[in-house]
Image (tube, rainbow, N blue to C red; front, side, top):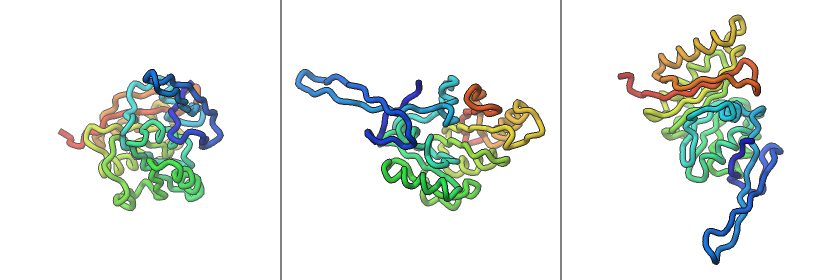
Length: 221
């Protein structure tokens, strides 16, 4: 089971199970406390599926700044918010106004999420809202997703920052097998100064999906 420490104890985001754990007092005269965790379902989150599949490094950690492309209504974003904690920031970009409404509602209770209802193909439209980030995560399921990720990385990602991408094969090219699509997308990322470090399929949670992790080299030397 995968869980994240709830940034907003007592609150569920999408009906997920919450688990409270008793933490003993750290000093003899202290009082025990409760810490609440939220169950992160890998069947509902590509990032969770990748973690459950054994990703070694995905760059998202306490205090990190994350640019999340394809935030949808914020199911996975809320768990990333838990992981980065109060010192981190999640810039959550979503194009759909319908999903965006849910995202904005959720972000009202989570001050480390900045919801941005814009097209990730045009990062210049939100350049005044987003600072330099440590990692770009993308789940955009578009044929030109490598270009979308590159545009955002060139604008916002620190040198040596992380790039984490969920690739859905049939959204890019349904006429060839998934492995061919994955290899082609990785090659496109290489051309945009992303050095691939890890790739794994998301079976049994998602069919014909993979997740790719790479390091961004701002200088091409």
